[in-house]
Image 1 (spheres, rainbow, N blue to C red):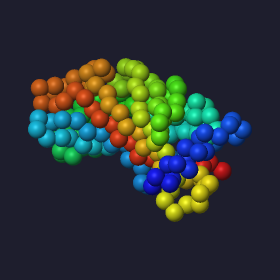
Image 2: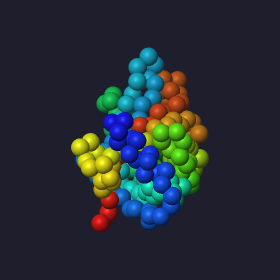
Image 3: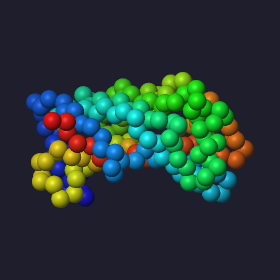
Image 4: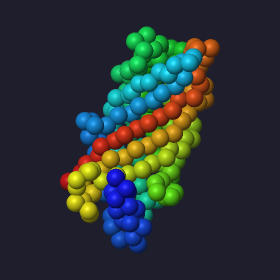
Length: 187
């Protein structure tokens, strides 16, 4: 796996010459996961992606763009009652706010990965968020084959920042995000 990361970093370090490349997210193998504390336990879950627009510039990572829309009505959770409560009016309020959106504002290379700064909108409230990103070639692909990639984005938000305050006495405020996306170059 380290060889894959090194190959991508070498490609990212080249002088600007290539054109940004559009990618589409493949639903198979992609997850938009989250976890939060529930007393001594954890609630985990996932969201369904409605739309994803990804443009990656391997020569100048600052030209990389990400726009993703999630369907709140199809969210799932590890506790059966938690999914319904999460979609209800005290947390996501899916009836009135059926989507969560993220639009990147800046991408910068940091160490072996990147920081993706953007605007996250939940319940109609938009706040800045920064996600850590790592990109890998698909295992077994040729050294310079970037037609299919795996992207991992991680970070955390406070649900109270978005007005999702229901059951604060039982459910933690911090929501940890773990996105693993399989992407393929648009031909």
